[in-house]
Length: 584
Ligand code: PEP
Ligand code: MG
Image 1: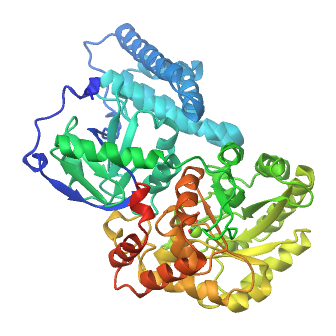
Image 2: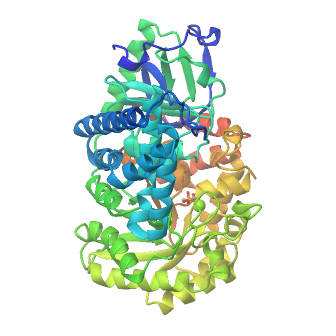
């Protein structure tokens, strides 16, 4: 494999990356890769607010800014031409923004006032973003493009590497402190072989991105940022290790592993255990495009539609019409997969605002402890009416979507049976016949019996259930070892939910996408699993090798283990299919 073109200026290799160095983190997506690393560049610092050098004329400052914006637009257009899907759209929109006339006018005004071209562009971007924010709706969403262009133009003026996912003509392993949701759009899975981060945990955005793209990934690996760009490393996303010093033998092993993984065929839309018992495999989605991709990947329905993902950056509640149209788009992606007699299920989660998912119009950014604050269903206390209006929009969208789809609704962050009953009343009032709740708070797991007397189903959110059971922030890389759904305490709570529940028990947290953990969840009582569409083939392939009795044995072994690593090791030892399919 040849080296990426932009790694020639890599700093001298630090001693810690000498061949034979091993870095250990937490594996969050299985798979192995060998390749050169490329790090995410440092964020672009704010330009100093000092007057322009008296030797630099206004005309030359204007010229240098114009050539920087033109160069950025050209680079983005060239990348858009090579990209596909969401990345293409994002890059094209950002390229247009680079030469936007409003931005240019605001910058030129400041240059003629004596400011540097960097500072002028920076302030112009601030003026345009606040104007977009005040317009709200779709316009407010363009603020991100303006900030991205601002940083790229400033980097171009300074002659430094542009921000965001590094660009390379050849495949590489991406090294970062952590990734943000916005990075997903420009991450090209054809170029990125694996993800490695120093921070982040199993429920972090990096882990979610890795699973959605099915990229081998290791998070919370201390010291990895010392690895110099261009150093060839081996990443093992199941074992959670990164090694330098690549031998021919290791290269052959990784290739053999890749061949084993390649045997896993696309998901055929029929989740089953070894004895033929049905175990529906559903998808987690955030919008219509995700839902269409999930339907194309064979998902049997949607197990988690995260509606808050539609409205980040909004400072006012979305209108009824906007909500109906956004929900309808997701429902309609599945109408043709179902019939009036056997409709496809779509589980819509009402707005889960707060903590890692703030919504400016619903949550208080000043709360001292947002993960334990007014979030999820609790926002009904602080903003009464928003939930009822959302449910009314869901009901209208369901009617409009036709008979092929069966909409279930669930509330996030439920702690008591009273809250579950309150949600059921609200859902029924809106005409929604299948209300349910998420089990993601230990109190709810321990009272799943009374809760399921109030609602039709539950869905276990293992991301938050792990965070709250282990009292460890899901976003903190330093707590990643605690923040692991393999922790026996978490497995016990999942088992308690499974055995006490009266109706269907879904699992929609990231744990469901782990092909080694999926059979354990089934053994603990899960009746369906929901995951990012990319995980469907691996999870389906493993489940087809496991009988219900074996799933119970695996669940018992994992729950009785003394630690998360022992739990995982016990399952890997008892389930040879994981090795045979290249998933362990
Ligand atoms: C969870 O907590 O497991 C879950 C599915 O919800 P989210 O990750 O959106 O909080
Ligand atoms: Mg949650």
